[in-house]
Image 1 (cartoon, helix red, strand yellow):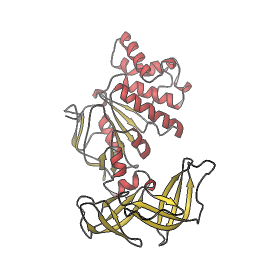
Image 2 (tube, one colour):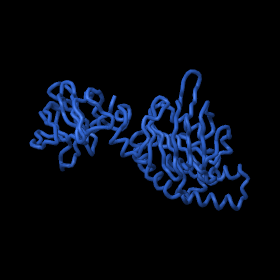
Image 3 (tube, rainbow, N blue to C red):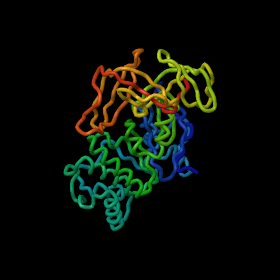
Image 4 (cartoon, rainbow, N blue to C red):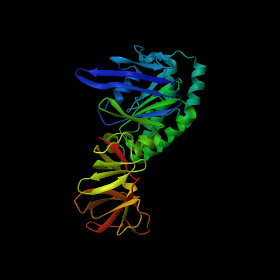
Length: 362
């Protein structure tokens, strides 16, 4: 049995349906992420798990027992908010101890458990400091320690890294991964940041308009999106509208308007004449002044550099094909002394293997 089950849950606010018949399950010890754009329903779903909102229909179960109608303070579930919500007049130690005092735990037990959880988040030396004396990353760890001190079955995290700068956010991602492994508590994490979700999660539920578009491991969501929305939302992706012209067990031939026919991998349920989208990641495309031909498994196109974006480790190139279509690709900036390989209007050639893209049915 899964630790947490969400069964056909619906939540409306007036005429707006924020969560629309969502069903999913979360296993014990899992780092599970709810991912999607603003307004997709992910935070509303988290608030229902926390007990701050009640579903209009459907059921939430933890260890097989219904959470419907159970107030937040009676649930073995704690929440870490985006703002951290620390008490500014209390020390780190006092902030972390607060939930235990409210629960009536004996003072000697409070001292031992606070020391234990501060060690888990590596803040022992900051126990007597005030929140104002801490960095953003340290305050975030205090908030997590306070949420963990009561040993909840599930820890809910509502965009806890969004207020941090990019470098600190990356450091905290690694800390969260390690902390979750150490304490073994189930994490349910809400974010709109695709990279963050891919880096942290065991599984991701991609949400749109109150529904789950795809629930899978990060590598499957990235490489095998089940809808055009998922392909477009997760990372950078070329989306090439096409029509299926033939289907076999090993290959499928598609026609892209203005480009021509090319082979790709077949997908379940594909039929001749059906429309869809070839989702092609930029890093799967070869780029060069010329690309060696003769490989029957590759398609080749000529074009010119329309634009480029230098990102430090890589440069993203937007290539305009001879028919005017724009294709995004990228190259690592690995050559010493060179920032990028091509400039605007340089003549180039693109190539990719037939199995580089993933066809999404319309």
